[in-house]
Length: 73
Image (cartoon, rainbow, N blue to C red):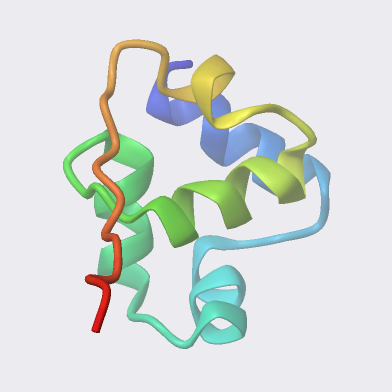
């Protein structure tokens, strides 16, 4: 999705970027970077996808998200 489509979908669900940032305990600029595809936070991408009712893959189809794994002790 284009970043403007993501922003519009958030507005249609009653969220502003600032309100979403406050809910997720991050800065509005962090949300903006995630929406634009510059940020790579799986947690934030999943939260945005959940709000607008789409999968992360639908919103950012060409982006690989690396996940951290815990090492066995």
